Image (cartoon, rainbow, N blue to C red; front, side, top):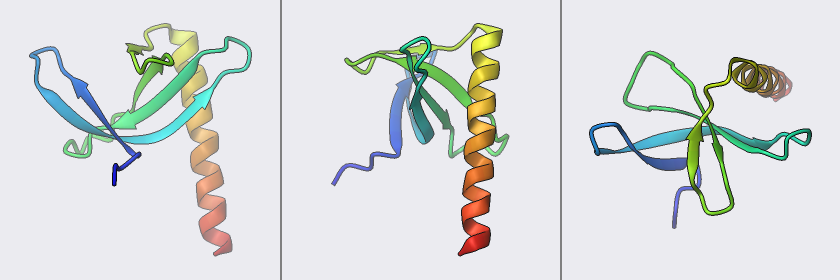
Length: 88
């Protein structure tokens, strides 16, 4: 069975890396789909934000306003997850 929380990307040197998906969402204003993920082998905690299309092509979010929007969505997601854990 395929693990749907994993994503394979190819880095600048051409090596494939397995990433862990935190969240995917669609921005209804722009119609863009986003995926936020981390490198499970890197303890820095960096979160990467990319857009993706229906063919699975990824494009890094480089626009500051767009990245800020992704950060806000991630923050809300984390808050929601923490609230859910407190209720359990």
